[in-house]
Image (cartoon, rainbow, N blue to C red; front, top):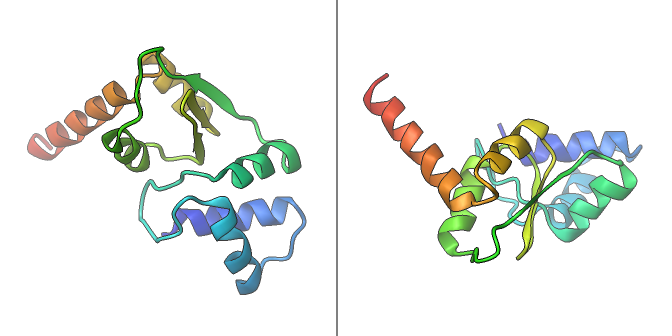
Length: 131
C-alpha cells in the first residue's frame, strides 16, 4: 500500500478538495519530499506539506527538539525514512511528527533519532532471528 497516496487522499478530502488523478499528481510532489512508492516509511513532508497540515487542516503536531550537539547525517535521514510511520517534517533543530505515540517514543530517546533508529533496527534484527 502506498501510504503517501492514502494520506494525500485523506488530506484532500478533509480540506474539501476533490480527489482525482490530477489533484493527486498536483499535490503529492508539493507535500512529500519523496513521491516514490514504499510499503512502509518514507513519509517526510515538505515545508508546504507541513504548513498545509498545520494551517489548513489544523492537525495536531508534536515537536521533538534534537540534542544541542546533534548533527543530521545521511544515516539519520535513512533511519527516519525507515522507522517513522507517520507524516513528519525535518529541520536542523528538530523533528515534527503527527502521531502522539511516535512523539512519546522519540522524547524517550531525548530527541536523538540516531539512538532511536539503532534501537529499532536492533529490535527488527532480533525479531527476525528469534521469531
